[in-house]
Image (cartoon, rainbow, N blue to C red; front, side):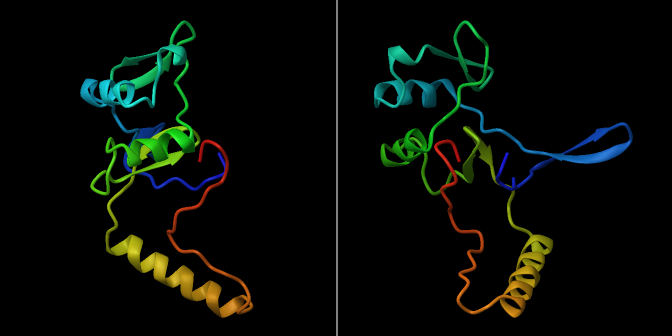
Length: 134
């Protein structure tokens, strides 16, 4: 994946701590709203299982496009209170910003402003469109 994930859960594997992205869980109500408001159609051949949307018959996770994600916001399915982002076709819950996160972000931002030419535009935690699914 080409994007840096904001990671939300810690898990332990072989005695080492690893950070794992926490996927957004769709409720039945949210899934039904997606169908009702035209974001998903009968042609999508998908189903909701355990809070995730899967392709029928293949059991592969269904990838949400940027267009669908934007429509979810426009049609009131997601709003500014949903602390989520779209990464590689999956809606991910973002980690709340704490002191360590904020301090590190400020330090790195200042560092890049000092070493890069003033013609360079530095975006810090702003939305970015990478491809059709991020």
